[in-house]
Amino acid sequence: MNDRATPQSVARADVRPKDAASLILIDRSDGKPRVLLGRRASAHVFMPDLYVFPGGRRDPLDHSRPFASDLNPQVTERLLAGSRRPMTSKSARALALAAARELVEETGLHLSTSAASPELATLRFVARAITPPGQPRRFDTRFFLTFTDEVGIDPTAIRDSRELLDLQWLDMSDISCLNMPDITRIILGDVIDLMKTDPSLGFGRDVPFYLLRGGRFVRLML
Image (cartoon, rainbow, N blue to C red):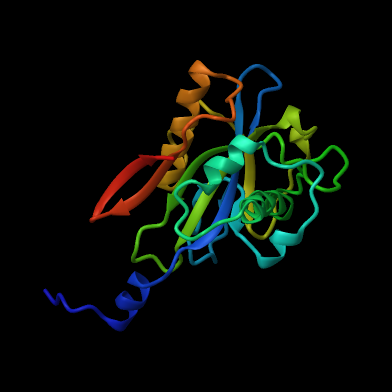
């Protein structure tokens, strides 16, 4: 077996993670929580044909986007904890605004009752994960969560996009057969466990952080 690294493998190992954000949106209107997931298009280099939460890379313009209400201070504090690079409150807010923007672009839903500036105050910070080395794309993703009734979202208003197809509200207790990335399944499992003890999911709890360290997949707490 040839153990020498090819230029392509070296390039992939050196890919620096880009800041990204994802939104876990839960509909609890009928008493049985459902989560919104969509299938990434086949043309994607990163995670094609897998079911994921809406989300994507933070854009430079996200730092200056307007917002109707700011993040809960406890959420901002957790976002700042353990950052690879110095981060300001504005940078932390930009991650939440990225999640709100991606939600609109990928599903047509707005974190607002009027399709105006997004309401960030209801967003919980529930997980962080860094794509392992060796992938063609790597992201340092922060996962936010909110409930549809908290921001006036009509669950029936979802629409497919070029980014996410086959958008569905799925019973959180019955998604075992869905083709999704391991990290998506792990984080969703964390949320399900948390909701068993705290259905409202408070803002100040510790946040799991998943990454590869020393060749091992580890779970730290922020």
